[in-house]
Image 1 (tube, rainbow, N blue to C red):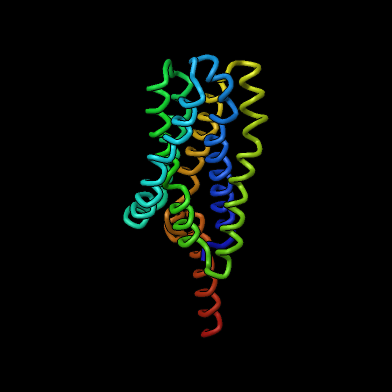
Image 2 (image 1 turned 90 degrees about the horizontal axis):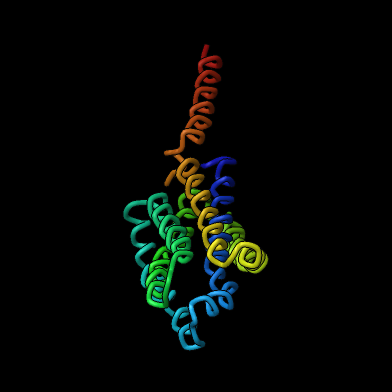
Length: 213
């Protein structure tokens, strides 16, 4: 049993979902600025939006397989690092080809999120709580899409569309640091959870010895 600390894990997953969809929606919000700056047409933008799903659909499966084999901490950490780096790299593109390339790699980074989130919930939460935790973490995704417009739009208007991609990439890197510091694949691997478990074990042992005496 992971105790109350499991809700720290749920909070990390909630924020991850929010950032995932914030990053994903950023291109749509910044599209008018990008079209003007890079001289792109409607067909170019259509290809650009579609290219995301090339990497994304394949790595939905790859992420689930990898989570089973090497654990969600490493898979989610690598995925978040990839999507943050290539979201930020969008700020430095100079043409359509680079933009397509980074968008495909961005999709690869975002692909493992769903399956890795579910693996984490399976490891950390009892079955009777699985539904509410899935609902909680999924709620972060539309919230991320909702706040993308004001965040990306305001930054793009004030500082340029390139800066907006750097800002949301930094948010992803910040989450990644928290994930690495606070999360373990299994509750019994976490020092805080183990400490509480050992405290209860010691207390029971002392109580049993006192009763036997």
